[in-house]
Amino acid sequence: MAPIFSFFRRVGENPLFWFLLTVGFTLLYFFAEHEGFYFGDDFSYGLYAHQLLYGGFHFDDYSFCHRFMVFVPTALFYWLWGMNAYTTTLWPLLCTLGTYMVLFLTFRKNHPVASSWALVLMGFYYFQLNTVNYLYPDNILLFFSTACLLVLYKARQPLPNPQSEIGYGVLFAVLNLLAFLTKETIVYAAPFYFLVFLYHLLRKENLRFWAAAILSGALLLGVYFLLYKVYAGNAWQRFDDIAAAGYADTKADYFAARATMLLSRLTYGPLVFFAGSGLAILLAPAVAGLALAKRGDFQVQKPFGFWAFATLVMLFPIWFGSVSLEYYKPMTLLPRMFHPLLPAFCLLAGLAVERIWGDKKAYLLLALLFLGSMAVTDKVMWTMYLPLAIFFTVLFFWRRAVPHWLALAAVMLVSLIRPVYFITKPTVSYYFEQKQIIDQHLSSPVGSHVVVTDSMMARMHPFFYGYQVPKNYTYLPYSAADSSILQQADTVFLLINNGVLEHPELMMPLREKDVLPKFSQARLIAQEGKVKLYLLPPKKR
Image (tube, rainbow, N blue to C red; front, side, top):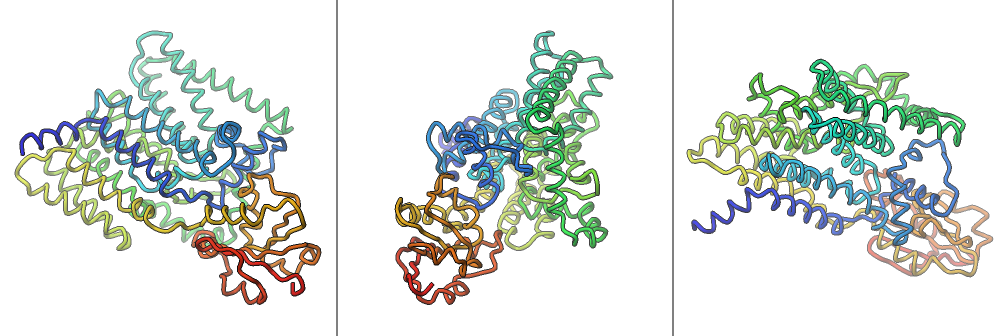
């Protein structure tokens, strides 16, 4: 038994093992759980990428068109390998793997325990995995926000020479601009940047770093706004579009019930959200580390102190800040909105484990935190929190020392519950099945054809054609079934994707049983999974 335990000990204490395991599972999830198309933001980003390649790109008064670092790299992949579901989502995957890489390379030598824990906590967190195979900006921003924080982490202490200060300062400015070109929520890191700036200013350290960062950042932003002025006629076009989109998304119900809603949102609401989303698994070790830390630990130049301040200061504007300057509206509590904070959450948790492991008080506190998470969430999440609460309770009473990697394995296994469940669960959107039907039956180069389908597909069908829809095909929603266009077509098809109709997030009002009675003469000609294609008779339309 001794050789076996020795082998597991060597493997468990090696950050490279956890890095490879995290990368491997992320790749498995990417391919095994790939939905192909989300019928959401990915349509817009993919369209912008296509327009960049084939012409037609313009600012369409939508905030997404300003996020160049989402669709410009995607356009490159379209140019290299063509447009499909995998080239569309390759950029988020690469950014996710890049995040793991920079964390591993930065901390593997000096903080192997923290490195291992940070990788597992981030890499097996379901909602981080959930956005790895959709063309959304969140995992892309995760990479750039991590890179920005790691540059600042490097610069928290005096740099060796003026060249390093200037080089890191310019790099810091460039990375923040790239993050800003990905998603605006990078601004939530600004208060922490300012805190570190004041710290260095008072100590008169790394002033060249900040001078280089501020000057190069000002120059880059100046060029950025000048280009908007030249090409869009409005230097502040992006901010105007963001404000307009935010106001359009804010329903009258919000203003009517704002006072009642804000009380919970600004007090206990985020805590309940952390438990319900699974973020409590990441935050529990961090909270335990903060609770057991000594006063001298909270110093910016120390690794634990740096990431503690990063977590707390960046969390403050997300908890209490507003998404609008015209009226007060806190950010919606969605898991992907917290992606910029994931590196701080996970590294603080890893450094906390590194410091407190072996302390019985830490085990007890972790058990209580997981029990508390159970108390404020539904029973579905008990499958994750109850095993961890029991595990750390056992550790509290266990008299022998337990290696940290055993607990890390337990955390990993519990975190696997959600992603493995969705991997084994049938597809939701049935993209690949619908794509197969379109390729086989709805791509004829001759004749005039109309496809009657759900409202979502009626708007987003260009994605299935690589944004190059044959001119002889017209897609109409079910509500337009009586349109005169039907009378002019050579062929009319009825396309029903029950996966889309039943998708809870899309909130479609119709079901197949509501649609088919309107087309009583429809004849089923193809079916793949929950996707059905009917042919309507020419005389009874």
